[in-house]
Length: 472
Image (cartoon, rainbow, N blue to C red):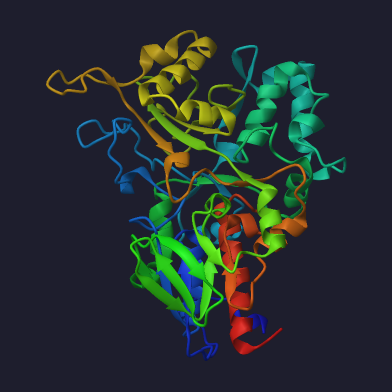
Protein backbone atom coordinates (compact mmCIF):
# COMPACT_ATOMS: atom_id res chain seq x y z
CA UNK A 1 0.00 0.00 0.00
CA UNK A 2 2.91 2.52 0.02
CA UNK A 3 1.62 4.22 -3.14
CA UNK A 4 -1.44 5.36 -1.19
CA UNK A 5 0.62 7.44 1.19
CA UNK A 6 3.55 8.93 -0.70
CA UNK A 7 1.89 11.79 -2.54
CA UNK A 8 -0.60 14.50 -1.80
CA UNK A 9 -0.65 16.30 -5.15
CA UNK A 10 -4.01 17.11 -6.68
CA UNK A 11 -3.06 15.12 -9.80
CA UNK A 12 -2.45 12.00 -7.71
CA UNK A 13 -3.65 9.13 -9.93
CA UNK A 14 -4.36 6.79 -7.02
CA UNK A 15 -8.02 5.94 -6.32
CA UNK A 16 -9.91 7.66 -3.55
CA UNK A 17 -10.11 5.87 -0.23
CA UNK A 18 -13.76 4.86 0.33
CA UNK A 19 -14.96 6.13 3.69
CA UNK A 20 -18.46 7.17 4.71
CA UNK A 21 -17.27 8.86 7.88
CA UNK A 22 -15.22 11.97 8.47
CA UNK A 23 -11.82 12.81 9.95
CA UNK A 24 -11.44 15.75 12.30
CA UNK A 25 -7.97 17.19 12.89
CA UNK A 26 -7.20 19.35 15.92
CA UNK A 27 -4.61 21.99 15.13
CA UNK A 28 -3.78 23.92 11.94
CA UNK A 29 -0.02 23.92 12.32
CA UNK A 30 2.31 22.17 9.89
CA UNK A 31 1.25 18.66 10.99
CA UNK A 32 -2.47 19.39 10.90
CA UNK A 33 -2.42 21.14 7.53
CA UNK A 34 -0.32 18.46 5.88
CA UNK A 35 -2.46 15.64 7.30
CA UNK A 36 -5.61 17.39 6.04
CA UNK A 37 -4.03 17.85 2.62
CA UNK A 38 -3.10 14.18 2.28
CA UNK A 39 -6.48 12.86 3.43
CA UNK A 40 -8.42 15.37 1.35
CA UNK A 41 -6.47 14.30 -1.74
CA UNK A 42 -7.74 10.75 -1.14
CA UNK A 43 -11.35 11.89 -1.11
CA UNK A 44 -11.78 11.65 2.67
CA UNK A 45 -14.00 14.27 4.31
CA UNK A 46 -11.82 16.38 6.61
CA UNK A 47 -12.37 19.25 9.07
CA UNK A 48 -9.55 21.07 10.86
CA UNK A 49 -10.33 22.76 14.17
CA UNK A 50 -7.86 25.53 15.06
CA UNK A 51 -8.03 27.20 18.48
CA UNK A 52 -6.41 30.48 17.39
CA UNK A 53 -7.46 32.92 14.71
CA UNK A 54 -4.78 32.04 12.16
CA UNK A 55 -3.03 29.12 10.50
CA UNK A 56 0.54 28.05 11.10
CA UNK A 57 0.82 27.04 14.75
CA UNK A 58 4.36 27.77 15.89
CA UNK A 59 5.20 29.09 12.43
CA UNK A 60 4.33 32.76 12.78
CA UNK A 61 5.75 35.69 10.86
CA UNK A 62 5.68 39.27 12.10
CA UNK A 63 3.95 40.48 8.95
CA UNK A 64 0.97 38.25 9.78
CA UNK A 65 0.96 38.90 13.50
CA UNK A 66 -2.18 40.50 14.86
CA UNK A 67 -0.87 40.95 18.38
CA UNK A 68 -0.78 44.55 19.56
CA UNK A 69 0.93 45.05 22.91
CA UNK A 70 3.42 47.41 24.47
CA UNK A 71 6.16 45.02 23.47
CA UNK A 72 5.28 45.33 19.79
CA UNK A 73 6.73 48.70 18.93
CA UNK A 74 7.12 47.81 15.25
CA UNK A 75 4.05 49.40 13.62
CA UNK A 76 3.04 51.25 10.47
CA UNK A 77 5.00 54.33 11.58
CA UNK A 78 8.01 52.61 13.15
CA UNK A 79 8.64 49.71 10.84
CA UNK A 80 11.57 47.42 11.29
CA UNK A 81 14.45 48.38 9.04
CA UNK A 82 14.60 44.73 8.03
CA UNK A 83 13.93 44.11 4.34
CA UNK A 84 13.64 40.37 4.98
CA UNK A 85 11.05 38.22 6.83
CA UNK A 86 10.95 38.68 10.59
CA UNK A 87 9.99 35.37 12.17
CA UNK A 88 8.36 35.06 15.58
CA UNK A 89 8.41 31.28 15.65
CA UNK A 90 10.29 28.76 13.54
CA UNK A 91 13.14 30.71 11.97
CA UNK A 92 15.50 28.34 10.20
CA UNK A 93 15.20 25.20 8.08
CA UNK A 94 17.03 21.93 8.70
CA UNK A 95 17.93 19.83 5.66
CA UNK A 96 17.45 20.80 2.04
CA UNK A 97 16.07 17.30 1.44
CA UNK A 98 13.94 17.16 4.61
CA UNK A 99 10.14 17.27 4.47
CA UNK A 100 10.20 21.07 4.90
CA UNK A 101 13.19 21.44 2.59
CA UNK A 102 11.43 19.58 -0.21
CA UNK A 103 8.49 21.98 -0.03
CA UNK A 104 10.93 24.88 -0.42
CA UNK A 105 12.60 23.20 -3.40
CA UNK A 106 9.26 22.46 -5.07
CA UNK A 107 8.26 26.11 -4.70
CA UNK A 108 11.62 27.23 -6.18
CA UNK A 109 12.25 29.68 -3.36
CA UNK A 110 15.68 31.26 -2.98
CA UNK A 111 17.59 29.74 -0.07
CA UNK A 112 20.50 31.07 1.96
CA UNK A 113 22.72 28.43 3.55
CA UNK A 114 23.79 29.51 7.01
CA UNK A 115 26.77 27.16 6.75
CA UNK A 116 28.29 29.53 4.18
CA UNK A 117 26.47 32.86 4.57
CA UNK A 118 28.04 33.98 7.82
CA UNK A 119 30.84 33.40 10.27
CA UNK A 120 29.58 32.27 13.65
CA UNK A 121 30.99 33.93 16.75
CA UNK A 122 31.56 32.43 20.19
CA UNK A 123 31.55 34.36 23.46
CA UNK A 124 34.51 33.51 25.67
CA UNK A 125 35.37 35.71 28.66
CA UNK A 126 32.91 38.37 27.43
CA UNK A 127 34.58 38.59 24.02
CA UNK A 128 32.86 37.40 20.82
CA UNK A 129 35.30 35.81 18.37
CA UNK A 130 35.13 33.56 15.29
CA UNK A 131 36.22 29.96 15.75
CA UNK A 132 39.39 30.68 13.80
CA UNK A 133 40.58 32.97 16.62
CA UNK A 134 39.97 30.35 19.31
CA UNK A 135 42.00 27.43 18.02
CA UNK A 136 44.45 27.64 20.90
CA UNK A 137 41.72 27.83 23.56
CA UNK A 138 41.45 24.38 25.11
CA UNK A 139 38.02 24.99 26.69
CA UNK A 140 36.57 26.16 23.38
CA UNK A 141 38.02 23.20 21.48
CA UNK A 142 36.61 20.81 24.09
CA UNK A 143 33.16 22.35 23.70
CA UNK A 144 33.17 21.99 19.91
CA UNK A 145 34.45 18.44 20.10
CA UNK A 146 31.55 17.64 22.45
CA UNK A 147 29.03 19.17 20.00
CA UNK A 148 30.52 17.24 17.09
CA UNK A 149 30.31 13.96 19.02
CA UNK A 150 26.66 14.30 20.09
CA UNK A 151 25.41 11.62 17.67
CA UNK A 152 28.02 9.17 18.98
CA UNK A 153 27.08 9.36 22.65
CA UNK A 154 26.68 5.92 24.23
CA UNK A 155 26.91 6.69 27.93
CA UNK A 156 24.30 6.57 30.70
CA UNK A 157 20.90 8.28 30.65
CA UNK A 158 21.89 11.70 31.97
CA UNK A 159 21.40 15.35 31.12
CA UNK A 160 23.69 17.16 28.70
CA UNK A 161 25.15 19.06 31.65
CA UNK A 162 26.14 15.83 33.34
CA UNK A 163 27.57 14.36 30.15
CA UNK A 164 29.57 17.53 29.49
CA UNK A 165 31.00 17.89 32.99
CA UNK A 166 34.52 17.49 31.61
CA UNK A 167 34.26 20.58 29.41
CA UNK A 168 35.86 23.66 30.98
CA UNK A 169 33.51 26.02 32.81
CA UNK A 170 34.47 28.93 30.54
CA UNK A 171 32.81 27.17 27.59
CA UNK A 172 29.71 25.82 29.33
CA UNK A 173 27.59 28.79 28.20
CA UNK A 174 28.57 28.05 24.59
CA UNK A 175 27.47 24.44 25.04
CA UNK A 176 24.18 25.57 26.53
CA UNK A 177 23.63 27.86 23.53
CA UNK A 178 24.48 25.29 20.89
CA UNK A 179 22.69 22.37 22.52
CA UNK A 180 20.21 23.05 25.36
CA UNK A 181 18.83 26.37 24.15
CA UNK A 182 19.00 25.20 20.53
CA UNK A 183 16.70 22.29 21.37
CA UNK A 184 14.22 24.35 23.39
CA UNK A 185 15.50 24.16 26.95
CA UNK A 186 18.81 24.24 28.86
CA UNK A 187 21.56 21.67 29.31
CA UNK A 188 20.50 20.84 32.87
CA UNK A 189 17.14 19.57 31.53
CA UNK A 190 17.88 18.12 28.08
CA UNK A 191 18.36 14.35 27.98
CA UNK A 192 21.53 13.18 26.30
CA UNK A 193 20.50 9.67 25.24
CA UNK A 194 17.42 10.36 23.12
CA UNK A 195 18.95 13.54 21.71
CA UNK A 196 21.87 11.48 20.44
CA UNK A 197 19.59 8.83 18.98
CA UNK A 198 17.42 11.46 17.30
CA UNK A 199 20.50 12.92 15.61
CA UNK A 200 21.55 9.48 14.39
CA UNK A 201 18.05 8.87 12.99
CA UNK A 202 18.08 11.99 10.79
CA UNK A 203 17.73 11.11 7.12
CA UNK A 204 18.51 14.45 5.47
CA UNK A 205 21.67 16.40 4.67
CA UNK A 206 21.45 18.55 7.82
CA UNK A 207 22.13 21.82 6.02
CA UNK A 208 20.77 24.80 7.98
CA UNK A 209 19.30 27.58 5.87
CA UNK A 210 16.85 30.46 5.68
CA UNK A 211 14.64 31.77 2.90
CA UNK A 212 15.74 34.97 1.25
CA UNK A 213 12.42 36.80 0.94
CA UNK A 214 9.37 34.72 1.88
CA UNK A 215 7.91 34.54 5.42
CA UNK A 216 7.61 30.95 6.62
CA UNK A 217 3.95 31.35 7.47
CA UNK A 218 3.18 32.53 3.94
CA UNK A 219 5.05 29.53 2.53
CA UNK A 220 3.07 27.12 4.68
CA UNK A 221 -0.28 28.70 3.90
CA UNK A 222 0.53 28.87 0.18
CA UNK A 223 1.58 25.23 0.07
CA UNK A 224 -1.67 24.12 1.69
CA UNK A 225 -3.97 26.71 0.13
CA UNK A 226 -6.26 23.98 -1.25
CA UNK A 227 -7.41 22.99 2.21
CA UNK A 228 -7.79 26.41 3.84
CA UNK A 229 -11.53 26.17 3.35
CA UNK A 230 -11.50 23.06 5.55
CA UNK A 231 -10.05 24.94 8.52
CA UNK A 232 -12.32 26.44 11.16
CA UNK A 233 -10.47 28.98 13.32
CA UNK A 234 -11.33 30.10 16.86
CA UNK A 235 -12.45 26.56 17.68
CA UNK A 236 -10.79 25.70 20.97
CA UNK A 237 -11.31 22.07 21.98
CA UNK A 238 -12.20 21.46 25.62
CA UNK A 239 -12.83 17.70 25.74
CA UNK A 240 -12.77 14.59 23.58
CA UNK A 241 -14.98 11.56 24.19
CA UNK A 242 -13.47 8.88 21.97
CA UNK A 243 -15.31 6.15 23.86
CA UNK A 244 -18.48 7.08 22.01
CA UNK A 245 -19.29 6.25 18.41
CA UNK A 246 -18.91 8.62 16.68
CA UNK A 247 -16.27 10.52 18.66
CA UNK A 248 -17.69 13.62 20.34
CA UNK A 249 -15.51 16.73 20.49
CA UNK A 250 -16.73 19.49 22.79
CA UNK A 251 -15.52 23.03 22.15
CA UNK A 252 -14.91 25.75 24.71
CA UNK A 253 -18.23 27.41 23.86
CA UNK A 254 -20.13 24.17 24.49
CA UNK A 255 -20.81 23.26 20.88
CA UNK A 256 -20.01 19.73 19.78
CA UNK A 257 -18.43 18.20 16.68
CA UNK A 258 -18.62 14.53 15.74
CA UNK A 259 -15.89 12.52 14.05
CA UNK A 260 -15.35 9.01 12.75
CA UNK A 261 -11.59 9.35 13.20
CA UNK A 262 -9.72 12.05 15.10
CA UNK A 263 -6.13 13.29 14.69
CA UNK A 264 -4.70 15.37 17.54
CA UNK A 265 -1.70 17.58 16.66
CA UNK A 266 -1.57 19.92 19.66
CA UNK A 267 1.80 20.51 21.44
CA UNK A 268 2.84 18.17 24.24
CA UNK A 269 2.54 21.10 26.65
CA UNK A 270 -1.20 21.25 26.01
CA UNK A 271 -1.56 17.51 26.55
CA UNK A 272 0.55 17.57 29.71
CA UNK A 273 -1.34 20.52 31.20
CA UNK A 274 -4.74 18.92 30.70
CA UNK A 275 -5.75 21.64 28.27
CA UNK A 276 -7.88 18.98 26.58
CA UNK A 277 -9.58 16.27 28.64
CA UNK A 278 -9.98 12.77 27.21
CA UNK A 279 -12.64 10.19 27.94
CA UNK A 280 -11.54 7.47 28.46
CA UNK A 281 -8.23 8.72 29.83
CA UNK A 282 -5.22 8.39 27.57
CA UNK A 283 -3.39 5.05 27.82
CA UNK A 284 -0.77 4.67 30.52
CA UNK A 285 2.13 4.22 28.10
CA UNK A 286 1.25 7.53 26.47
CA UNK A 287 0.98 9.47 29.72
CA UNK A 288 4.25 7.91 30.88
CA UNK A 289 5.89 8.99 27.63
CA UNK A 290 4.54 12.52 28.11
CA UNK A 291 6.13 12.62 31.57
CA UNK A 292 9.52 12.03 29.94
CA UNK A 293 9.12 14.91 27.50
CA UNK A 294 9.49 18.57 28.34
CA UNK A 295 8.40 21.81 26.70
CA UNK A 296 9.83 24.96 28.23
CA UNK A 297 9.13 28.67 27.85
CA UNK A 298 10.67 30.23 24.74
CA UNK A 299 11.04 33.90 23.83
CA UNK A 300 11.79 35.35 20.42
CA UNK A 301 13.16 38.87 20.71
CA UNK A 302 13.88 40.98 17.63
CA UNK A 303 15.93 44.14 18.07
CA UNK A 304 16.58 46.91 15.56
CA UNK A 305 19.82 48.85 15.80
CA UNK A 306 21.04 51.99 14.09
CA UNK A 307 24.37 50.33 13.38
CA UNK A 308 25.65 46.80 13.06
CA UNK A 309 28.32 46.61 15.75
CA UNK A 310 28.64 42.80 15.90
CA UNK A 311 29.89 42.23 12.33
CA UNK A 312 27.96 42.23 9.08
CA UNK A 313 29.31 38.82 8.08
CA UNK A 314 28.44 37.16 11.38
CA UNK A 315 25.75 34.48 11.50
CA UNK A 316 25.01 33.07 14.95
CA UNK A 317 26.60 34.37 18.12
CA UNK A 318 26.79 31.56 20.67
CA UNK A 319 27.51 31.72 24.37
CA UNK A 320 25.29 34.40 25.86
CA UNK A 321 23.79 33.83 29.27
CA UNK A 322 20.91 36.33 29.13
CA UNK A 323 20.26 35.51 25.47
CA UNK A 324 21.96 32.22 24.60
CA UNK A 325 21.35 32.55 20.85
CA UNK A 326 21.92 35.77 18.92
CA UNK A 327 21.33 35.65 15.19
CA UNK A 328 22.33 38.21 12.57
CA UNK A 329 18.96 37.77 10.86
CA UNK A 330 19.79 39.61 7.64
CA UNK A 331 22.98 37.76 6.82
CA UNK A 332 23.06 36.55 3.24
CA UNK A 333 19.63 37.94 2.38
CA UNK A 334 19.61 41.67 3.00
CA UNK A 335 21.43 44.90 2.27
CA UNK A 336 20.73 45.81 5.89
CA UNK A 337 22.47 43.92 8.68
CA UNK A 338 21.18 45.86 11.66
CA UNK A 339 18.54 43.50 13.01
CA UNK A 340 19.22 40.86 15.64
CA UNK A 341 16.92 37.91 16.27
CA UNK A 342 17.32 36.28 19.68
CA UNK A 343 15.99 32.92 20.82
CA UNK A 344 15.84 32.29 24.57
CA UNK A 345 14.55 29.01 26.00
CA UNK A 346 14.34 27.22 29.31
CA UNK A 347 14.90 28.73 32.76
CA UNK A 348 16.26 32.00 31.40
CA UNK A 349 13.15 32.45 29.24
CA UNK A 350 10.95 31.82 32.31
CA UNK A 351 12.94 34.39 34.27
CA UNK A 352 12.65 37.04 31.57
CA UNK A 353 8.99 36.25 30.88
CA UNK A 354 8.13 37.51 34.39
CA UNK A 355 9.61 40.93 33.62
CA UNK A 356 8.19 43.95 31.83
CA UNK A 357 9.06 44.07 28.09
CA UNK A 358 11.36 47.09 28.38
CA UNK A 359 13.23 45.40 31.22
CA UNK A 360 13.73 42.27 29.11
CA UNK A 361 15.34 44.38 26.40
CA UNK A 362 17.38 46.33 28.97
CA UNK A 363 18.77 43.06 30.37
CA UNK A 364 19.71 41.89 26.88
CA UNK A 365 21.36 45.21 26.06
CA UNK A 366 23.40 44.96 29.25
CA UNK A 367 24.84 41.67 28.02
CA UNK A 368 25.56 43.12 24.57
CA UNK A 369 27.17 46.17 26.21
CA UNK A 370 29.51 43.91 28.17
CA UNK A 371 30.53 42.04 25.02
CA UNK A 372 30.65 44.97 22.58
CA UNK A 373 31.87 47.87 24.75
CA UNK A 374 28.54 49.58 25.39
CA UNK A 375 27.37 49.60 21.78
CA UNK A 376 24.10 47.78 22.42
CA UNK A 377 22.53 50.61 24.42
CA UNK A 378 24.25 53.21 22.24
CA UNK A 379 22.86 51.97 18.94
CA UNK A 380 19.44 50.51 19.81
CA UNK A 381 16.87 52.05 17.47
CA UNK A 382 14.30 54.31 19.05
CA UNK A 383 11.10 56.05 18.11
CA UNK A 384 12.06 59.73 18.07
CA UNK A 385 8.72 61.18 17.00
CA UNK A 386 7.99 63.79 19.66
CA UNK A 387 4.30 63.77 18.76
CA UNK A 388 4.09 60.08 19.57
CA UNK A 389 3.23 58.98 23.14
CA UNK A 390 5.92 56.28 22.80
CA UNK A 391 8.59 58.94 22.24
CA UNK A 392 12.07 57.59 22.85
CA UNK A 393 10.74 54.02 22.99
CA UNK A 394 13.17 51.28 22.00
CA UNK A 395 12.09 49.50 18.83
CA UNK A 396 11.72 45.77 19.41
CA UNK A 397 9.31 42.90 19.30
CA UNK A 398 8.92 40.12 21.85
CA UNK A 399 6.96 36.96 21.22
CA UNK A 400 6.54 34.99 24.46
CA UNK A 401 5.40 31.55 23.42
CA UNK A 402 4.82 30.46 27.01
CA UNK A 403 2.04 33.06 27.23
CA UNK A 404 0.36 31.74 24.09
CA UNK A 405 -2.54 29.79 25.62
CA UNK A 406 -2.69 27.37 22.70
CA UNK A 407 1.03 26.61 22.68
CA UNK A 408 2.32 27.08 26.24
CA UNK A 409 5.99 26.94 25.26
CA UNK A 410 8.51 26.56 22.48
CA UNK A 411 9.03 23.00 21.26
CA UNK A 412 9.39 19.57 22.79
CA UNK A 413 12.60 18.01 24.06
CA UNK A 414 13.48 14.70 25.75
CA UNK A 415 14.31 14.45 29.44
CA UNK A 416 17.22 12.32 30.60
CA UNK A 417 15.12 9.14 31.00
CA UNK A 418 13.37 9.38 27.60
CA UNK A 419 13.86 6.65 24.99
CA UNK A 420 12.85 6.15 21.34
CA UNK A 421 9.93 4.04 22.59
CA UNK A 422 8.46 7.20 24.12
CA UNK A 423 8.17 8.82 20.69
CA UNK A 424 6.42 5.67 19.45
CA UNK A 425 4.05 5.76 22.43
CA UNK A 426 3.22 9.44 21.82
CA UNK A 427 2.14 8.66 18.27
CA UNK A 428 0.46 5.30 18.86
CA UNK A 429 -3.20 5.09 17.68
CA UNK A 430 -5.79 4.49 20.39
CA UNK A 431 -8.80 2.22 19.79
CA UNK A 432 -8.37 2.54 16.02
CA UNK A 433 -10.11 5.95 16.33
CA UNK A 434 -7.76 8.39 18.04
CA UNK A 435 -4.50 9.32 16.32
CA UNK A 436 -1.62 11.64 17.22
CA UNK A 437 0.81 13.73 15.21
CA UNK A 438 3.09 16.70 15.81
CA UNK A 439 6.83 17.31 16.08
CA UNK A 440 7.19 15.43 19.40
CA UNK A 441 5.95 12.20 17.77
CA UNK A 442 8.49 12.23 14.94
CA UNK A 443 10.75 9.16 14.88
CA UNK A 444 12.99 10.24 11.99
CA UNK A 445 15.26 12.48 14.03
CA UNK A 446 13.51 15.80 13.46
CA UNK A 447 11.46 16.15 16.65
CA UNK A 448 11.24 19.79 17.66
CA UNK A 449 11.27 21.02 14.06
CA UNK A 450 8.81 21.79 11.27
CA UNK A 451 10.20 18.85 9.28
CA UNK A 452 9.39 16.62 12.24
CA UNK A 453 5.81 17.89 12.26
CA UNK A 454 5.46 17.27 8.53
CA UNK A 455 6.94 13.77 8.79
CA UNK A 456 4.52 12.95 11.57
CA UNK A 457 1.64 13.93 9.27
CA UNK A 458 2.82 11.42 6.69
CA UNK A 459 2.93 8.71 9.35
CA UNK A 460 -0.43 9.49 10.92
CA UNK A 461 -2.32 9.68 7.63
CA UNK A 462 -0.90 6.29 6.68
CA UNK A 463 -2.24 4.97 9.99
CA UNK A 464 -5.67 6.53 9.41
CA UNK A 465 -5.94 5.18 5.87
CA UNK A 466 -4.90 1.71 6.95
CA UNK A 467 -7.50 1.91 9.71
CA UNK A 468 -10.21 2.84 7.20
CA UNK A 469 -9.18 0.05 4.83
CA UNK A 470 -8.89 -2.49 7.63
CA UNK A 471 -5.19 -3.11 7.05
CA UNK A 472 -3.28 -4.14 10.16
